[in-house]
Image 1 (tube, rainbow, N blue to C red):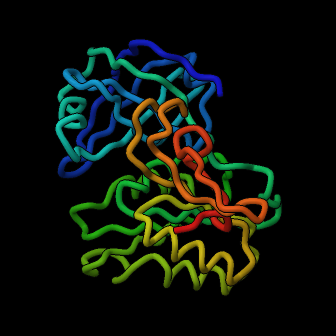
Image 2: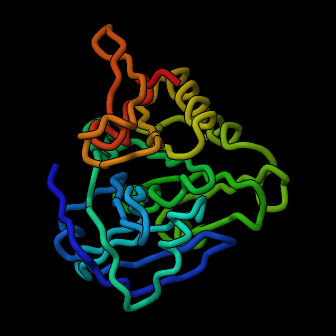
Length: 257
């Protein structure tokens, strides 16, 4: 795992929705190394442990990484107080992202995101180029990045729990329709655990390669503290692997939800 650690300039800050912020950070060395599905680890002023935040976009030419995060507690609240021109104490990029090896050149890629799990799939969709996106949110107030996905995807399906925008319901119904059409090479997903489990079940049913990005509370972010383990079935054995270093992206068939 190659990563950089330092203080990097925040060059753009935007509020996308209630308590959801977008940061664009100038960090040429980290941007050069980053891959879709990886994350950054940010120090919040006054807190010992860093906060992990998924990478939303990578611009190697501009030397920037974009992150989109939800303010969930005091740590992310402190990070959200940073403003343009401030410096972000950050380790990046960390973890293993989505893989290329099982993606057919002729097949379609589908990215499936739920809530704050949507941001890391934007760079993933850009990376594969021929993606369709299925994005789920609680209501229209929570929708983020829809316009950005429409710029880079061949198709975007938005679902809301309350039906205020797009299709009413969860992401599995439109995902199943896309799988029924066929010609799907891979599914890449990030979101709540129950959603990931349902996506994994559909991928297995249709025999489609699927990777999911898991979320656990992290301490060090580099695999030393072993505080973010998840249960994986690999090689006929159940194993406890570290989400920060062995993941956060895993083959969906291996994850014991």
